[in-house]
Image 1 (spheres, rainbow, N blue to C red):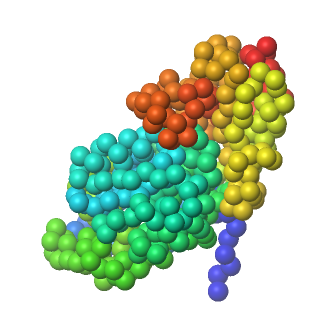
Image 2 (image 1 turned 90 degrees about the horizontal axis):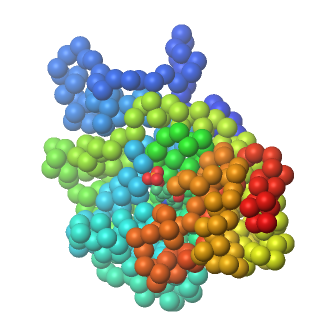
Length: 425
Ligand SMILES: *Cc1c(COP(=O)(O)O)cnc(C)c1O
């Protein structure tokens, strides 16, 4: 049996496997299309009778190599890249939900995802119930309906930094015969592999730590292959009954464990687009090569910064799940013993107004709408990313109006702390 590679090795060696005489480095297949000798061969590809490339909207070798690397890092069976994290979460839901269906989601999710679920998908006829992720199971049970098709949460919520009790959510989802979808953007597979705790589908905004250098917007969906869609065929007819737009193929019958990703590619990507550009996939791959080096450094620096902030009198509160005494410290120790992420949230005693003054005084940390970059950056969600949400919705999403989101980079930590120090002074 082939030896299972460690995440560090997969970061470097996973994905692109050149054959004899092929380029050592993953090539950018900068081509919309692919050439065939006979019309018959091309036809078989369109019928999904044969594996192969014909149009980059459906599949591209550069993208597939990078998706394969992420798939191996998560320990899944199949994966696809998308043009953004938003597209990944949208497809993850639309692949198994249509008008009349319902989703249960942790309320403490990323603002963009919250908008997608409660505003845009609602217009598609898909309802979403937001739940308090810390509520006991009996309470969470009440959110389920006969038409519930999926449960959704983030390993570490952006920016609330709530650590999800993945096993609890997996139990709930599975007792209702629906899959658990986990957005693992902040933890990354270096710190947490949700499939090991019962999640069925993992999504990523690769824009964050995976890229790591604020170069490309991208997303990924990975399937564990462990959810048995046929155990409740009436629930997931899109996977378990013939697809008329593919000559009556039934995805679960024809593709087995790859059914979910094959449907997302062959049907959703075909009809809706939002493929990742091969050029971006190439850049993402370079980021992935150092993910296992950067993530521990982000965590180490963030822990030191969190301890520094906690020690200051002018800081009202600090949330960092890696910090001893944090509300989510125990859950973080269970699911992410090696570290959580580089993002800290905190509030100043001066509240909302003091946050703006403090941020303007920072020199090294830049005000940008981004997190999980090698460079330290800072954001005030109430006036930036989450400004569509009312104060009430902000609190529901776990975002205090005074909350400053600090994404600690991989610079020298003394320099980061010195910058915070002068700005607070
Ligand atoms: C940023 C982010 C998204 C959205 O990803 P984009 O790549 O910006 O579309 C989704 N989920 C989480 C947890 C994020 O941090």
